Length: 184
Picture 1 (cartoon, helix red, strand yellow):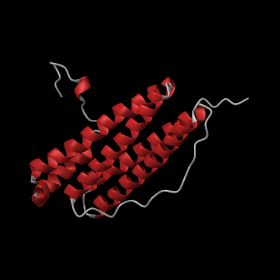
Picture 2 (cartoon, helix red, strand yellow):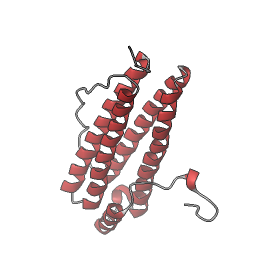
Picture 3 (cartoon, rainbow, N blue to C red):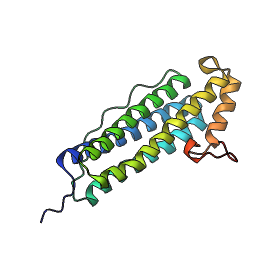
Picture 4 (cartoon, rainbow, N blue to C red):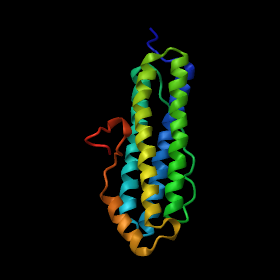
């Protein structure tokens, strides 16, 4: 008996997301090693943790495909992009990567809606929220770097920023959680 509850199109787009999440883990890992070699231990710490988080996302998608009777596929990964020139470029590249991943998640949610695959649509909502957090987190990093002086930040500012980034939580404050008593 065939127990697969996923269409071929849904299976294909989810398997593509498996690859995207694995590549995201590699990108974060690559940038973490770059940051560490540049002396940004705090930034490296954050990026190493995010590499693991992206692998967790990959596992969620693999598990979902398998749980719904489909067959997850593990494929070859693209090489991570070249090292950034500075912290500004690092954060900008990470932000662009997260925006691209958000668009891929939207494609999954859109296709599942079109196919009336409500289980996959519901599964995708967790990733929609996660991408809001991911983009917000990187925008906050970019804002902090801008306040520190951006690409022209002094060594002292970068040292302070790096220490603060290393101590910050991995989750960003979201508008959906704000209230009058706790706006951020």
